Amino acid sequence: MASFMSLVIAGLATGAIYALIAIGFSLLWQTSQTINFAQGEFVMLPAFFVLAAINAGAPFWLAALIGLVISVIILGAMFKRLLVDPMLRHGVLPLAIATMALSIFLRESVKEFYSAEASPFPSFIPGTTIGFAGISVSLQHVGVVLVAIASVMALTALLDRTPIGRQMQACAQNPDVARILGIPVERMIMYTFLINGLLVGIASLLVSPIYLAKFSSGETLGLAAFIAAIVGGFNRIRGAIAGGFLLGIADNLAAAYVSTQYRGAVPLFLLIAVILLRPQGLFGKAEERTV
Amino acid sequence: MDNPLLKLDGIIAGYGSMTILNGTSFEVRRGVITTVIGPNGAGKSTVFKAIFGLLKLRAGSIHFDGQSITGWSPRRLIEAGIVYVPQGRNIFPEMSVRHNLEFGAVAAANIADLPQRIEAALDRFPALREKADVQASTLSGGQQKQLEIMRGLLLDPKLILIDEPSIGLSPLLVQETFAILKELRAKGVTILMIEQNARMALEMSDDGLVLELGQTRLHGPAHDILNDPRIAQLFLGGAMGAAA
Image 1 (cartoon, helix red, strand yellow):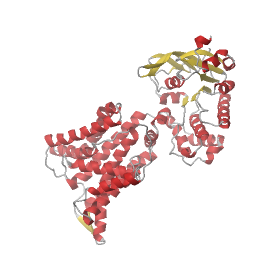
Image 2 (cartoon, chains in turn blue, orange):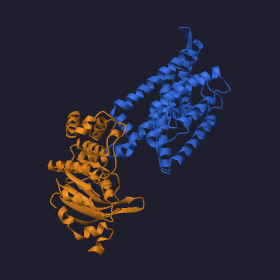
Image 3 (tube, chains in turn yellow, orange):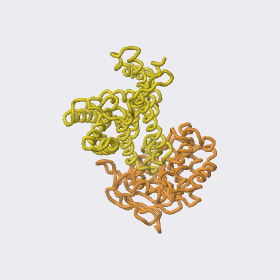
Image 4 (cartoon, chains in turn red, brown):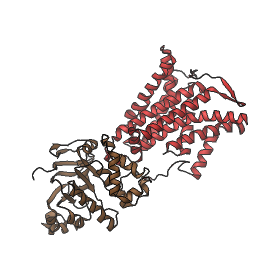
């Protein structure tokens, strides 16, 4: 039982990171019909911004801050202006393909210009293990869960309690109506991209101390978060959160009780089951579109 | 016309390479209901979008209350006193009726007495008060339209642009909606309305405006338009020139 609980807590930590990334998927989809297949690389990249700042002599806290700011600027604002805006005019599919190209570009650029090796990454939280009621828990895992939960709470408070958040929700629900009510729809969409830039930056700071900073780490993270968003319901933020945690826990339990070799297949089994039984996702809403 | 509330002068606008408004010009009197009629493709809805800043003008100018509003954003226009109620259902279906109303005032965040205004509006529409805290998607078509009008009224507009308010409504609800518009006129609000149900709309309007191929063909007292023999011809698909 104790080891089961330890696995669940480790799973929650993985799931919390998936959830942060999946929320970004969901936000971009809801406000601008962007499916960002480079989302995994967006999580991989900020770690290298931080490492570059550390190499330039910045203390870790400052480097982390620089990493977050650069993430918001490059992976938020510039991503929207330079790639999404020009491509979205041609439709959702060309944009999705362009983000796939971007993911390859980012991955190969880091490999070429930084390193092909995994780089150790510092952490704000010590990696010690603590015992509690017979359960041994990594302090880092607890920290990851707490930071992720705090981030999600801050985001939901922003969306539900502030005028800007409410305007963003209005744009997600119906941009045409939002426009006639005088809501600056374009600006609200930009805000969601900036938020996504911040979320992937936070996810990067949380995941890199555990799995190291490596050019290829975005592949698995991006896929897992994409599946989490679909399992939870792509058009719901709470779906993305639930999907993230579900996937994280299932992943860890499957590795321990089923087979480590089949660990990677678990998210895919979940994905197939959800698509067959509840295509709109656990919390999602069915959407209709004319093709 | 002396001191019109709205004045369009030589508007040219369209979508992509297609020009819909070919030098549209007209004036709207203050405190009256003006109904815009015309065959499909005449540019009725397009002219509303152009007035409300949702469509970029290629040429021409728009004046509202004596000042140029050409190129203004919807937000600025709302603040100046123009509200737009487009065709179809324009609510946030997943939000409650009350939240939908609060959203109507998003552009005018400095309304201090918004809660009181919402309460007053709910008093005016008892059917909506009953459903104030339920999802707006549960409202009937007529109630949804009323919600849209009500949302616009919270901003105390001087001019309401309303596109096909009767579409999809039962005859009784159409009567109710038109009664609301008449009530607004009595309070001094100017209404510019597009309506397929031309006869009924013109009967309650002060002025009528006939658009064809993006140009004003007729403009005058609603009664005159209603009795103009060329109108029937126009709505049967003939061109004004041929009928004249």
